Length: 140
Image 1 (cartoon, rainbow, N blue to C red):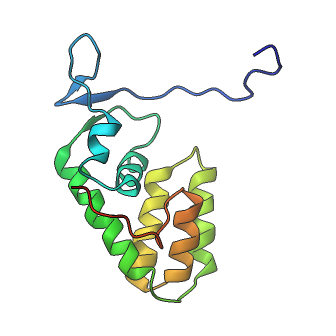
Image 2 (image 1 turned 30 degrees about the horizontal axis):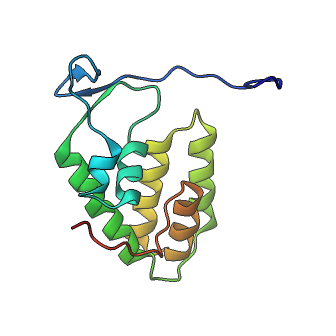
């Protein structure tokens, strides 16, 4: 870029597989986001990806993708409530501050949904880039 510093942070990421084989162009065993977007709402895909820690090696699982869509729907229903719990909101931030532990942050969102803390749920989901107020048009 000609500008410095180019990066201030670097990290090692886990590999993503399909049926326990590392995804690779040469094997042709790739799952593309644009294909998933034809079948699932974008926020459900984001939720699915965030359910895996960035350092962990994991395999794509269609059943878990479907479950993430259900998880998102449950959050959207719970987000209609007005309950708020700042302790839960702080727990989401603490999880992210702990080595970007997004799976733990999503677990806190589940607790918020179960407790009816919709205001906290909406705010914390937004922190993860998940808009619970936007009801997407289902894929064709």
